Image (cartoon, rainbow, N blue to C red):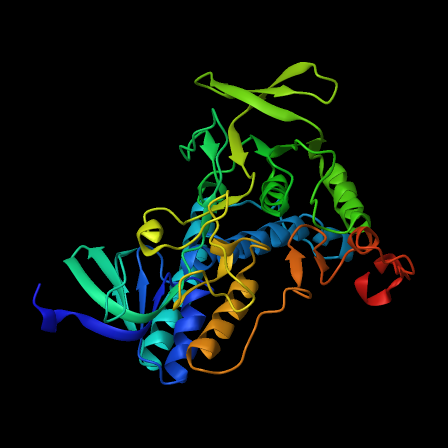
Length: 396
């Protein structure tokens, strides 16, 4: 490739998700010559197969449930409400496409160059960091003074449970179903599993949650979790705590899950779908991070400081790729901080008061330390206030 064909940028953002594209936009606003490289989804997992589509189906499930009870307030609907999953998927796709187009418009409007392809870092040379890009148009190389790694994460799998989006689903597959399964087992009692489990329970699926630990939603306040647990029971969702999934078998007309119960005994559960929701892992492979000298921890997350700097000068990392709370708005804030730093401004990221919301029914939210976390840190003089929504007129 001729030398004059190599493009040079002051900043290159790898990944156009909720961390990457805000970083690129802010860099553009700060007059930093910027390029964003995206290999798959403009807007990232959150916009395309995560946060946004999940909120869409959660909204639909809430409406579907309410329609079943409108007679209680004097609204008569002839017959029971029915659900057309294919139409729901079409509507959900329209929401996603509209927002994806908005991301492109914002990037271009702020002078950001968009390259669609897979990026890989090489060894730094005298001109800067070298990035090779493979796309449907071929291969090209660009040079960057600064790089922002924002490649996100993907669902984890467990041994013996290969996701095929038929019997074994991950969150992406669960959000794409065009029929309502009769039965579903959710492996993992975290926020993704419970949100989607409640959606399908409202659609009429018999849902069972299998959780290896003694409790649900381990990072949330236990009093709030107890409210969600009561609603799960009321909805007919079976929750099996301290229960480990040991394997499964496809019986043509059903899947059979083998579990180890809390008392050490084994059991088998028939189901139609198995949803794996056991956490997420970073997309740190195949990026050339070893060649660039970027340090990873034991789990594959990129190591970064409070200014999102890696151990390599001029290379930053944000979002799910660096671990911690895997939240879209956390990644967005980190992207904004990185942009300010690259532009020469003073900025740092404070992790102490990141808000988090679980879109179960009811929704629960937190910011700062929970009561148990505060006690674990040695704070003994605590005041705990409680107010039941049942006593709040507007909530009724």
